[in-house]
Length: 371
Ligand code: OSB
Ligand code: MG
Image (cartoon, rainbow, N blue to C red; front, side, top):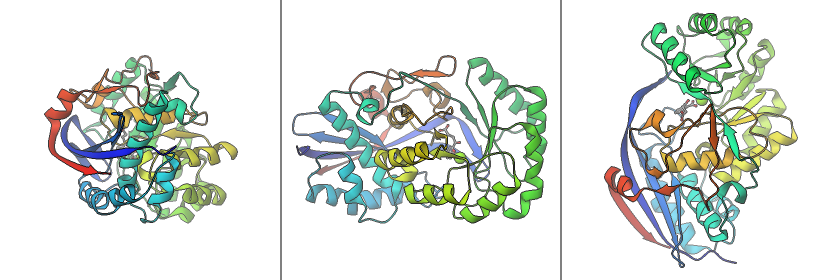
């Protein structure tokens, strides 16, 4: 049966992170993004969230390119076509090249709407079975090693299941050695956000005796071949993040031996349907996956939680609790983490209510499109 899509609203929000988040590329604290709200003829509402940042440091997309592609191309596709099932959206959007974060913004809202119409949680709608999920935390680059050790201690106390430490040239082996010395048994991994080249292989080999779970995205996103060469040199498993935009990328990376683990992010791969396909392929090929984060507000966070209930998400993800990021989130209840575990909501759709007051408070612009 066709989903009777009636209207799409695009709420543009501006929120400020509790703390600046620093990676090998630089720092983010102000975050502008969109909450998409799709409304059907029966009064149901589905929500999505965009994850592109203001500047193209992570992938090529930005807040403005997302808006451009949504307004001028994706909305038109929804206006001109019938949707029976959320997977149809991925198929229809494939006529627009890449721009995955823009696509995922709308696709996520349609998945939520679909699950609400079926009166089932989004996790169930996509085939997830878990009632709770394990989570870790991603710690940005800190001003000093002392600050970093203090921060790690704090999150170990809170029960997070693994610590992800951001690294960059000049701030890597030295830092991780110190961390390992103070936390001999804590599950630790490193994320380089593409900061190295294959010429750094000898240097990166020094990570091998630190017992890291993995090193995430050491090289540039399109250097899949070089990642395969680096993985041959390293015992530490490589996990790819920025390199994986699609199932096709995942197949190539796995078959070339460029990684042993994949970080799946809904926005980076163009939506939940593609994320699920990558998950299914990894399951078949025995590649562990985990769910990455993009410093999301509550709606995006809820989508990540639902995705993580799929069975091959066997490693803790980056989906920390709302209060780690925001003084006030835009959902009720907020996402809370106890002993490194999030309870998966059992309400229909994303399972959290959008807090209308909070949504209004952070909204800087609102656009409405008839579908
Ligand atoms: O590389 O995983 C990344 C945040 C923004 C962009 C890229 C990354 C990250 C994180 C933090 O590591 C994830 C989160 O806590 O949401
Ligand atoms: Mg990463």
